[in-house]
View 1 (cartoon, rainbow, N blue to C red):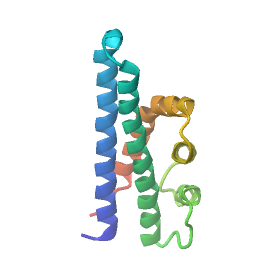
View 2: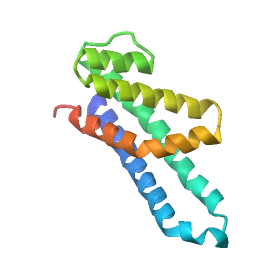
View 3: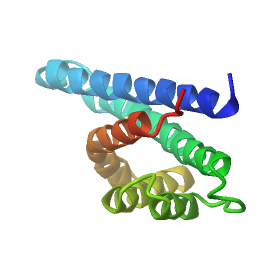
View 4: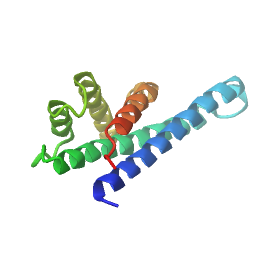
Length: 148
């Protein structure tokens, strides 16, 4: 198996893990919100939410690194080391659409915020955005998979 195919499979596994975590958080909110008084709902919620955020972090990292490898193997990208540059180059190469590039850049900024300092308001906002981010990542990942 070549490196591009391997990176794509790893990306799909990461996205699958993210999807499961999103589903678990949603299920937790739906089932346990009515029992808030009987246990520490807020702490349990944060554990589920933080799992979603952590999985988003490694999914977005794997995502842009896969795009980088794809562009390198297509001889489109040579020296770029930064995620934002890779996304912009992918847009120029028409691998992704302009509106997708803009959203990916927002995702990368969000990911960078969570990895440097933990702020509750940032975590809450990001957790609410991740389900939509997942849909976009998943759509692009399947569209730009390696041609076998």
